[in-house]
Length: 287
Image 1 (cartoon, rainbow, N blue to C red):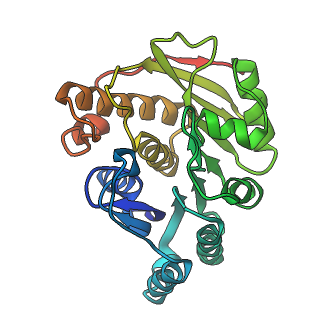
Image 2: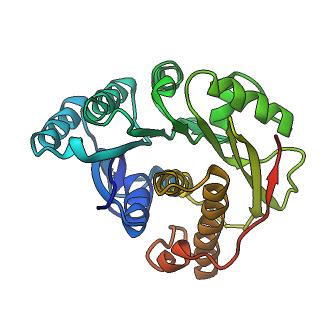
């Protein structure tokens, strides 16, 4: 029997971010996914122009009610959340988690605290970053911040491995078992590489992959990374094995996208490579 997951994130009709980036990789890994969209846009906002609408918390709760009426929440092994928009949408996600754990107390919650990035700053409504920090993070088993988001959650600058591990340890004290930092650029990581850092009670590991020079930065990579790491944990992989697989899988996706000269992640073309990446990258144990 496949694992069943609930994914609550944004959705775009064209391209791959949010649920449009997470659902297919999860399905390709063998998971049944029920997706609730926090927004439905024509394309991601990085293009500058987009059409569509943000769904109200009442709409999301109505969809959640309908899923529950079908008995689907009893089967959920995990909840995955990404872009929420505002804290009221966030409250619906915690309601969903509570309903799932009523049936499955051991269900995992993977929270991708989407709120901002280096260079862009915050791109969500005021109040949401604080809500995620104070209300979502304590309920999560796994969080997947980028470096900017981790810096906010821990309220400290991150320039070295020591800084990063201090920040992840501080965040883990609030509840999450795993903190996966999805884009680490610190003094010890060569400038032509990008780091993926996993911190847990069992230890801390870094894997670095080549940085590809995309003309326009890709969107959706963090959404894919969160989905794949959650999938590996649900399959029973050790944390460090999951980290190594995810780094290889995402790099294979990046490399094919780069070779194709495309701005959108080439999820369909790279699907087999992502399942069986050709190149694994060496793990470095930090703690």
